[in-house]
Length: 204
Image (tube, rainbow, N blue to C red; front, side, top):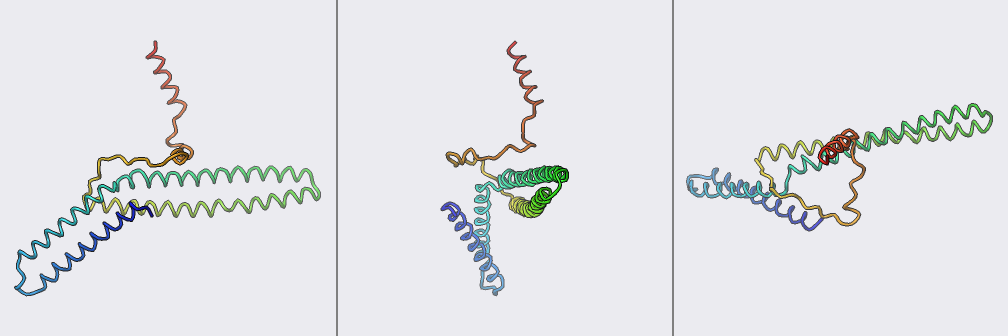
């Protein structure tokens, strides 16, 4: 865990303790007899309101809507793409195995038996795709559950996010590691042709 994460966790934990302490104190005073003045209770309620407002500001600076609007959807899209890619690749492998089995039948004899045995091993190994797909789907569901809970928290607290774009701190090769472009975000040939036509019109 980074120093920044530790610091944020410490701050949030400290404020949670303050909120619990203030609520406990207010409840305790209310349960006491008339010796406790309304002024004392109101002072502690104002302190409680201040801590809650500070927490809202801190949550806003953490940009929770970036998590729900960008990071989690981006991660789930990439995971869905992994499921689709592995499923497609597995289908191609199994189709090739079917062809190999047919050719082996034409050869006949011990060679055909040996080839068929190896092809069956490939079929068995391809079962990884179902298991992997199920596990990745569970991860995607977990991400979406987290996204929903963060949305509810942000909505309940009325958090306003900071108008500061997060800085990309990646360096070297890490800055380039975005993986292959998702099909849904790819530029189509039609878009390229349209752009080129518009540029031709400007140059004339």
